[in-house]
Length: 386
Ligand SMILES: Nc1ncnc2c1ncn2[C@@H]1O[C@H](COP(=O)(O)OP(=O)(O)O)[C@@H](O)[C@H]1O
Ligand SMILES: N[C@@H](CCC(=O)OP(=O)(O)O)C(=O)O
Image (cartoon, rainbow, N blue to C red; front, top):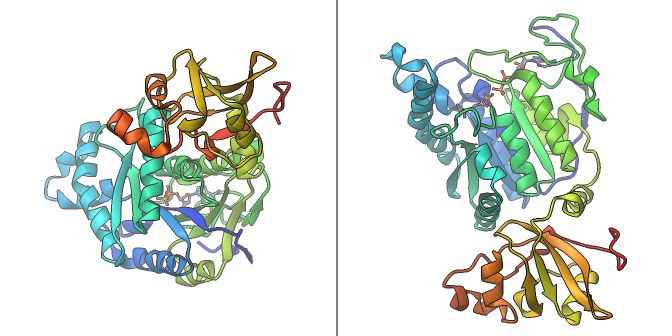
């Protein structure tokens, strides 16, 4: 492959990133997992940690590792159940591979699409990942291939990484592959392919550039990377695509320089989240708050605590969108909306209490806030979005 290289450019500023590492890097020789490229990536992660940054690693490689473990039984490698068994066999190798590079603990997080569509499990996954980062651990995420059938599947780890980036509110999605970045066509089959350094928007013309996987072990090729970048952009997260086999490129990356492709976001993360919060369908439940609480919410930056709640109306589950109302001129008036950490029956039991009393009242706690400020949007007095 003899095509021009991407130009060097500044990496967008970031503090928390999701780094996706594909099978093409971890099982580059087509066999089991190797440290050959993982080492350079681990050095980049360690340098990021030293700089006070946080990384969630989305690592593929379970199927390739499992296949190497049962090499003597090639017939075991075909069909969906066989693939799932290979992933289960190989997943311990994936986590062990990463753990050997770090003093800090490595945590295994396996997710399916279903987990992220279900509001309760979405909140649980988010809380767990945030907690792992707060503990200084390195979360290593992969698709839960054991239970992933078509309707549950995210399909590939590029898309999973984009969803995780939105889930953990990352500043940046870093996709490491076995190629420098996006080209105008697959450079393995088109000698005249030109490097694309900066993508302002993923248009049909950009999508048409993508071909399939280059290696026998990679699954998505460029197509799923563009899908992932599209998802991340809609959530206000920029994506960069770079070559994980290029040791110099990885050192550059640690110095905030990129030789690869940068995909711009559609707006800021805050804007994307607030837009979603304003427009996401509500379950029809209402939480009623006193005037002091309503003022605190309107001031911005406050979470809804149980102490300010005076009542609820309707039913909702943990993770549902709820309307937040206060009494104005003897009418319950909507002042905000957001995602409730507690179900209606639970809010009823903790309303008016102090946050530290939640555990005693319920016997468990999902945290001190009923609606966290990150999940809350205030509305203008007349009910139009502020
Ligand atoms: N337009 C393109 N630009 C760059 N790479 C492309 C393009 N179209 C297809 N590819 C292929 O995508 C491959 C990377 O995807 P894949 O093999 O699935 O890797 P991973 O395991 O990292 O997800 C590259 O090796 C390349 O052959
Ligand atoms: N969950 C699978 C990975 C699927 C996948 O997306 O692979 P890749 O395209 O190499 O990132 C595994 O660990 O083998």
